[in-house]
Length: 346
Image (cartoon, rainbow, N blue to C red; front, top):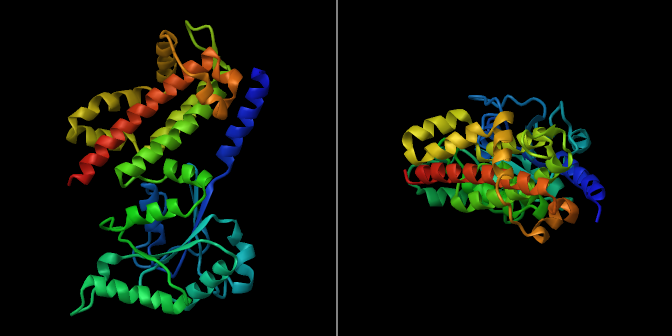
């Protein structure tokens, strides 16, 4: 076994993972709320949201951790004709497609969906603004069924329709889980890591996904020994760990503002909040590494081989970095779970 060979393979693996993103395309008529949906799915405010009309005149691209979400402009318009649309926006490169609408289903969306279907692509239908669906004398279930039948008639196939509201969060959990269900295993890891969790079950999937990143990034930090750790006879690339810790916080949506606001409501959060903020800096990471370097680290090398290789997994540096990374992940996960439990109990 060679640590140099393992290190080269690990660097290539980390570079590949960071470069390949899950690509999600959203299409539909102006004003359907595509930008608002993107913000709900990632749990942030990455897109400027229009009040009455869709501000998108060209493809608006949102990069968030492992995700690339694209709000596409109208299909088959004078500016973006149908015969050039697929090539201009590299449509076939996306992993999944969301057809978002808020009123009657439009002919342009039908034609675009049929093109996607002919190419074997997966498309989910999302009826947004669920809170505005109303008609005198009809129950909501009947109105939802009418919408489903209209979509079926337009696209000439029976399709599931997910009803969402960005105002009330209605259906956002179901939409996120449907995206997760309809992508391949590699992309499931990316979606779980980057999308906002609306359920405890999804939060557990997020932790599993983050664990795989901890294994890889910790191994890369251990073999790229740039920074000598004071009092420890090893060098570790702290910048890789800093990126890892930042990514974990982003995955759980744990901004300083959110942590502080929730800490006042949930007293048991305090220890985790202190650790998350304290160890999220370069100085904090070095302190954490020194803490774990002073402990006897017992691990099973075999469990790490698929992620980092036997030589790296067996090294002291990897044991220290991985233990530090898992400790930080554990604090973030516990804090996120307390916050989600609090939100779900309301």
